[in-house]
Amino acid sequence: MSVLVLAEKDGNQLKPSTYQAVTAASAWQLPIDLLVYGDNLDAMAAEARQLAGVRRVLLAQAGHFQHPLVEDVLELVLGIANQYTHVLSAHSVFGKSVIPGIAARLDIAPITDVIEIRTPSTYVRPSYAGNILSTIENLEPVQIITVRATAFRACSRDGEAELVTIDAPAVRGTSKWIGEQLTHSERPELNSARVVIAGGRSLGEEFNNLLDPIAERLDAAIGATRACVDAGFAANELQVGQTGTIIAPELYIAVGISGAMQHLAGIKDSKIIVAINHDPDAPIFKHADYGLVADLFTVLPELNTALQQH
Amino acid sequence: MKVLVAVKHTIDHNVKPNIHPDTGLVDIAQVKKAINPFDEISLEEAVRLKERGQVNEIVAVAIGGAEAKDSLRHAYALGVDRALLIETDTPLQPLAVAKLLKAIVTREQPGLIFLGKQAVGEDYGQTGQMLAALLGVGVATFASAIQLKDGQVEVTREVDRGTQTLSLQLPAVVTADLRLNEPRFIKLPNLMMAKKKPIETLVASELNVDLAPRFRVVSASEPQQKPGAIQLANVQELVAKLRQVEVLQ
Image 1 (cartoon, each protein chain N blue to C red):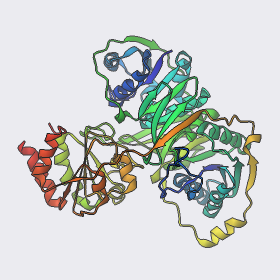
Image 2 (image 1 turned 90 degrees about the horizontal axis):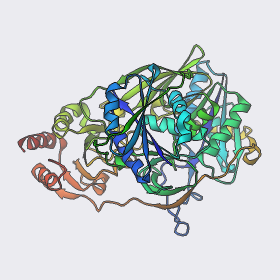
Image 3 (image 1 turned 135 degrees about the vertical axis):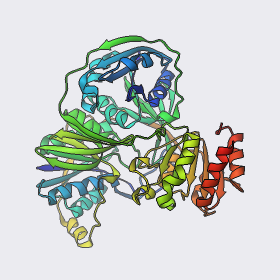
Image 4 (image 1 turned 180 degrees about the vertical axis):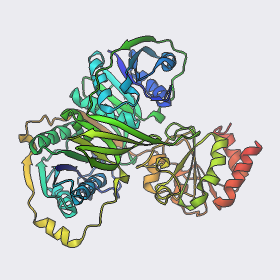
């Protein structure tokens, strides 16, 4: 019995969610193999070997993995799946796109968006937009899951896994990568940041002017509500909530956010929630740990100054 | 070209689910149900492709009891040409749903298959990806823009730090995200007309598909609520508090 964890990379590094996925996989107390795929893995192989708890790093190197496609990774995993009783990936955009297909081809039901592995085949996952936590017993002979990365700590980097090269299957060709429009931000990614500060529509054109300096000081990711994104004040990928990114940082600061259901669904796992709003009756205060009723156009510059002084 | 749109009749997204005191599970038998909003977006996209002359037939398919016909009527009112109900009394899990849809794809031979990125309710988010894998065709999840050209479908999709564009050979499976479009408002006469349209019914258990559940929901609970915010007087108090609880170094 052993576990296959699917790694994901960001440039020449493993994504933080890969470290968190390895921690989740360790709950099974079985040997863990980490599958790393890409077109040029020399730099990353050394990093991958250090993930604590990993027995072997499986390297699949191929030109077409420069921009991995679901169909190609699916074939790669199916080629080695018979060696594993457990398959796990982070519940990232790629993880949730590829894992259900892998499971279906093995005639196995996957469990997605797991936040806790309670027993080797019992999992807790949110449903109904985070309003319900379901405990699921998976009766399948192979356990295939995706985990919400932020629900698990990152594993440490003191491991020394064996490095194994595996063959990449030929290109499937059913889909082709055309291009990407990615925001190159110095800020951490929303789904793995320790601190997130998000703004609502009321920030208007001042969204970046008000939030950027504070985010910089806190090394925070910046988020926005759906209304703020729809109004064009913030980029699409900044949206936090049920229909955007679901976050679980140590500290979440909600600025000018009233607290719509769909937004709350995306933030409720944050450890500490701070709400700043001029309306004392805003629902967000019911879900926050600390509240500050104030005009955000004066309070944000003040916060920036206060953080500077310490 | 034909488009198949899978439609789920599910808990209305405005309804808060309740846990039944006897079973300890979410009770959706009596709650208000509606078409899954992401499926409505899929339908709208199919209708737009038809209006552009790139699609000539739209077939909507739902799986469920007779009540699921409501969502198929909604699909008719939006502009689909045919509606199919795969009837079953037992709630099915995503793998069984994907297998049933595969049977329908084999029968209908659509060039494009649309699904919502997930269904409101259990939020599994699996069916489209499973269907594509079982069919051996390409899949583009979380679509925010779709273009048909030269026998391919070009899909812009929402990824972690922005968007990505893929080109897929047809047939292909595309799952709709929120920003793909805004479904049109349904006019009353269309809804009235939809009531008269035929809904073809197939029986799930007669489609030679393994429908058995693979996992069991053991219990459900509501996440712990916070007791409410401690109100602070000013920014200095806030910063002091955050240092005290050690979220600020």
